[in-house]
Each structure stands twice: as structure tokens, then as C-alpha cells.
Image 1 (cartoon, rainbow, N blue to C red):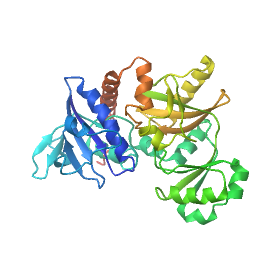
Image 2 (cartoon, rainbow, N blue to C red):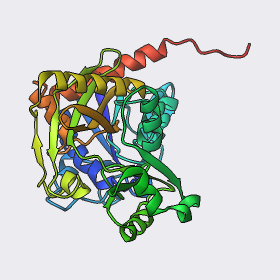
Image 3 (cartoon, helix red, strand yellow):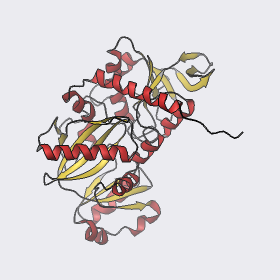
Image 4 (cartoon, helix red, strand yellow):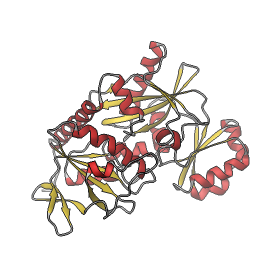
Length: 363
């Protein structure tokens, strides 16, 4: 199996993607039958080949290497003679992948952009398709779809940048309570998110969130346990036992998730069996409501140990050494190497299924 591992990208989650890719690379290479080529996308969108062992070996604490011409060779992804190819500037072929494993967190990678490229080229890839990726990336759309499916979400108000001057603290607190979450609609990893409790904080939080997106959400602050489920599968959907996060700060920040390692992760966590089973059922329903395939992580608040509220769905969850998705499956008896191989099998099965569909053409 010739696997193209794609990471980096133009997103503000660029460095997280590199950290995830390092763990995935190690897991894929554990199977000696795999041939793994690494393609890093720099912050401008240019693709470069990378020597995985050398490049990922430079990660050390806060230091993450930069993808550039100094670390790799400039390449493009294209198609020739019914085959997807990775080519140099001189048009020489570098690699002919059988499948692509993208781990490009955030915008231009997790939002359906790359998935659309892969579908257009006609190559199998790990993870959700264009529609599910785009919907899950947009927290506003996710909430609307889940609400229509009868799944509880935190009450919210969507604000477009043209409505910025209309944000009113008194109105929002009357509707949602004294504490509010402000976050960009289409950014992950808690980037741009702020917990506010007074009018001055709200104005700063709104300005901050609009630095990352032209659409933001103001949400009711939900007090409850932060529970996550790892979900896996195409038609046959499986859900892991629950994991729980106890943040070191007021909420689960970017620093907690990827840098400090100070948040407490309970994998799996304890709760009454009927409550756990209800959470797993809701995670499966949420996954299917958005049309997810391959993998996703569904994040909940559990209020008073009985009421489940979906926070968000992540279609390319983190795969770092402290990330919840691989930890949950490892606790369920599926180590990283096995999980990655099964995700590849799911991608190949979906591609084979979709290739059998009839394409209507004008006669």
C-alpha cells in the first residue's frame, strides 16, 4: 500500500497538524508493508515532500519545524494516464499513491477543500467526504443540522461581521445567562474562543473571534462534564467508551490541548451504564446526521450526569501523543497501528462503493 500522508496547510492549526502527522507516520511505518510518502503543505499552500523520519524528528516541546524548500522538494498533486501522481517542477513523478491520509486540521484542509480535490482526482482518502467535512467545520451549520435531528445543542446566536455593531450584552445575557462563550464559527482547537462574564470582555472577545472568521457564535455557557466519544465506520458505525477532560483552565484551551499537557484526561471515564449507552447512541446519531464516514470525534457536555448536549463534531480529530481520539480506541483494545490500518480499509471500501455508482451523462 502506497500511502501519501498530507499535513500542514494554511490553517491556524498548522502546527497541530504537524504534531498529529508525526504520530500517524510512526503508526503507519510500523507496518513494514506500507510505503509512506510525506507531503507537507506550507503556510502559503505550497506542497513539499518531506523525509518523515528526519522532519518529524525535529519536533521538540514547543518547537515544530517549518515546511519549506529547505526541508523538502516542491511538488504538485495531479493526474496522468488514469493515475494520481505527485510530481516535481520538472514533471518527473515522485510518487504514485494508492490512497491519501490527510491530517490537515482546520480551514483549507478539514473543511472539505482538500477532500474535494481528492474526489475530483479520483483517489481514495481517509476521513469524511466534502459535505460532511464542510458541515462539521461550520459550528453554526452543525448546530442547525443536529437540532433538526432532535439532538440537543447549546443555545446560540450567530453573528456575521456586518452585524458586529449590533452585539448587545444585555440582550445576550437575558437570553443565555451571565456567562457566554464567544467563538469563530469555522475554526477548531479552541482558537479564537473566549469565556466572558461582563460587557467589556464581550467586546474584546467579539473583536478577537472576528480575527479568525467573518461569522462567529455567542453561546450559552453550559456547566457540565466535558465528555468525548471516538466514532469510527461507514455504514457500520462504532462508538468508543467515553473519555473525560478536566481542563487546567476555565475551559479546554489550545494550550491545554496541544502544548501544556496539564489537562486531566480520563480514558475511559466512569458513569452509570445507561447514561453511557445513551451518550454513545447520541454520538452515533450525530455522526450519521452530518453524513460522516471513516472517523470523527463527537464532543458533549454532560449536565447533572443525565443530560447530553453536543458541543461539536470534529471530522479530523487530533492524533498527537495527548489526543483523545487515539487514546479512546487504544483503551477499547484498538492500538494506533491497528486503528490506522482499519481507517485505510474504510477509505478503500467507500471508494470502491462510490466507484460503482452510475454517472448520468447527456446523450
